[in-house]
Image (cartoon, rainbow, N blue to C red; front, side, top):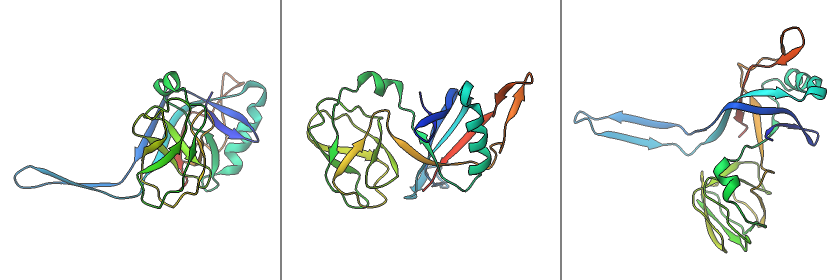
Length: 196
């Protein structure tokens, strides 16, 4: 289960439909010969749009969370992993070496199995979530997207169902709760943007 994480538990479970988007500013222009030119900016953030289900006996926790966190206080989200990643991964450990800001890969030592491309990862020394862009099953360079915005120290890499995304509620999320049939809570579609 993936969702909004607070005080060691999931208080709102993500349900389908759900989308995870990479938002990276790009400037695109067509020339007079209709060839397209584009330039990417270095900034990138993950954005999640999903339906959400409060846990039945703890539905009050989600309502309090929505009201008190507002749009400016970062929250923890248990980052959803792709079903293909879950089915293929066999790694048992993931320790990385130090890497400089701007690096597009990190050195991993003895993963003990496969970490498939498309895996969301987070390094213990900072909060940015990255995605692997190639499979790795032995020690070596693990390509990641986006590039590191800051240096990382040698540390453990979270890559299982333990990747916490620091996020903000988007400004169109209800700061409260909607009730259906008088007693069923439905916060509607929740949009979350990575806090960077």
